[in-house]
Length: 144
Image (tube, rainbow, N blue to C red; front, side, top):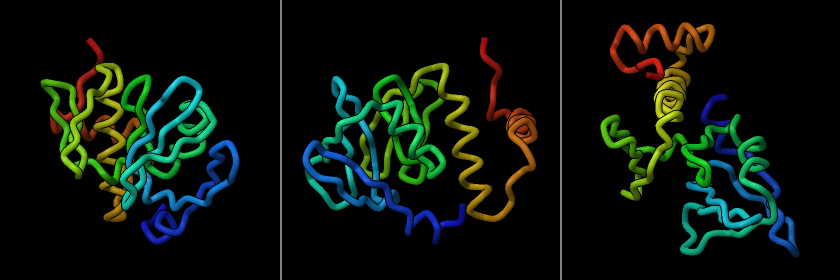
């Protein structure tokens, strides 16, 4: 998806009383909270709480660059500042550091590279081709 489509995409979020239209590109992080999801939005100090599961949020938002880094947190791939392979941590552009589940780290690297390649219009034909490119550059390791 190109950036113009992404920046115009919206989702309806139900907070228990009202359905709110949210610009997906403004979503920074979604965090599970016992049957609710707190959605941190750019430009808002407090997160919006919606009634749904994190799995439902992931299914709805993954095609827009929202990625599950561990059992309780989704992040916007466009909001990543850096990844640390050694500590398995991701730093967001707001300098918040979050743990990435070890079994999700390689997928996160692949997703980040795909987002970058897509933004410059050079997306490989399939995921296996992307993994092969990353292996050659020593950026991807098979699970041990």
